[in-house]
Image (tube, rainbow, N blue to C red; front, top):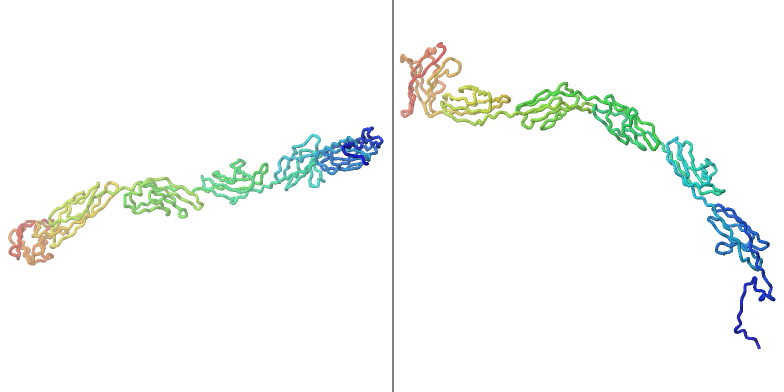
Length: 534
């Protein structure tokens, strides 16, 4: 009958170092003595290290920080290490592993990359000064001319490059206890400043004026005259001295200065200042002419007037002028270099003409006086002077002559009025109509002066035939006429023999054909006044 295992408790113990009362008659296994590892020096980042330990004849088991076996053997060559790490080593005697392992702390000697400051842009031929700022006490700074770090140029945190004429790259790294940092590349830019470019190197300026100097180039442009700074910028305003100037312009960048560019500024003399012939007043309607001294036909002439500006020749002519031309006049002369000079300003007043008054056409009858009208003047002159009481006054009397023909006659008088500055002229028209009755002159002066030399009778236009008789004081007939011809009915003051009668009163008589004709003066006396009786 088999024994029953129900209710049997199985106790399991570690294989190694079991209690002796349970090991009998079992074989006894001993833990191996834990190994002693050699503490390594710090390593450089990325290096591999050989770890060694005293095994006392036992096999060694190498584990990482989390207890994973990484190697079994005497000497452990680690993989590349980039940060601090802990390894453990245990002894194994074939049956048991040592209870305690030995820890190996591996410190990675990690170097940060150099941080470089300094002037990385320099002028051509200058030195760049470079400096590493994050240097620890036990670190060295190595400067190289190549990326393979073969050609060592300098050791130290501060590096002054040789004089450079072109773009250059330097390589710098840290070295500490045999370890090296990553490389930092340093770029040095060499700035080659070209002289500024000036389009016009020879500039002419009119006397007393300024000019704008303009240039292009790198950096900041500095302008100088005789070593004195005029201004900074691509363009400046400059007024040269009377004799002209030599200007230099340089490009500045940081401490770099280019070769100068030279600009010559010359000064053109102004044309002679024109002097306008003096004139202050002119009458309205007249022609204004202004000239100036020493005219030059090759110059341009601009006349500034109160009304219209003129680009004309050496003189200005405006015809006729009116009130709108009262004001300031000035002449600007421009020579062939474009330089201008202006005359003095003169004031010219256009004076209004005297107001004569209305001069309408006047109607009158023969033998009836009328008074002519003018005003606004200091002096007056009426022309022609015929039949006027006084041609030199404002209001002369006009006495129309008896008409030689029974038709209206037209007279025109021009009056010139002068107010002391200006003259004005107007025309007055007079129409003299014949009266519808016989008109007889009572005085003649047959002296041959063309005035009142003949005696005639003005008949109405409807009178067809009449007879005229003239008698001397002895009742002797000395002139007679019959008909209606106005060219033949005139008496020239001579007797029938052709001699001028003596100064005296003579009797005349008129007979008409029409029986009912009105003749208020059909008989009467006529007086002859003559200086000569020849």
